[in-house]
Length: 198
Image (cartoon, rainbow, N blue to C red; front, side, top):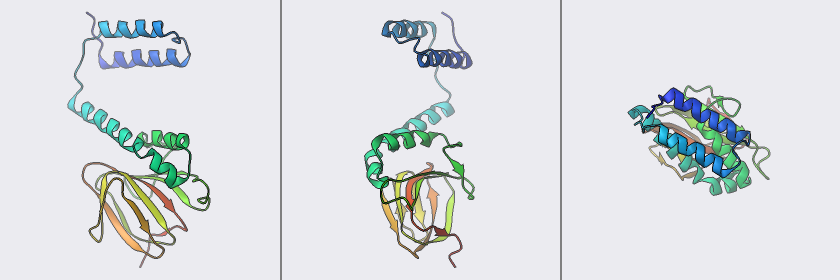
């Protein structure tokens, strides 16, 4: 029985995807036959521990984020299809969807909110484990909904997935990402932030 190394299998899967994209495998029988050929010609290979951990983490992140879809629709006042599109872009921290922030290890994804949010800065913020947001002052209201990860504020308040937080105008705080997971949160900011609060 022939074996495929990971590179060969990757090319084979890309070829299948290209065929599907071109509608050349529109017949379910053709798809089943091709998939059956793969199943019989490839011996199962255990992924490396690093690859396994990355795959499980990526699946958990996507599942976790999708679990917030309905709440995010209400939060951003957007339809489910739009929210699902934004959530699908959470796994790739690359332009054009994301931009690197001025803080090391922090990425931003901006988009327009729905009715009543035209003047707000809406989007997602991704912070790597161990990163911090230095003390800053809110010039207007800021709403924050945590999707993943955990943080600790400078007054020892834990920030956990599912938390919905309001920072009022002229309030100041700092926070740090704790634990091994990145912190991902949805944010609506009115009037901006002053990074020099003192």
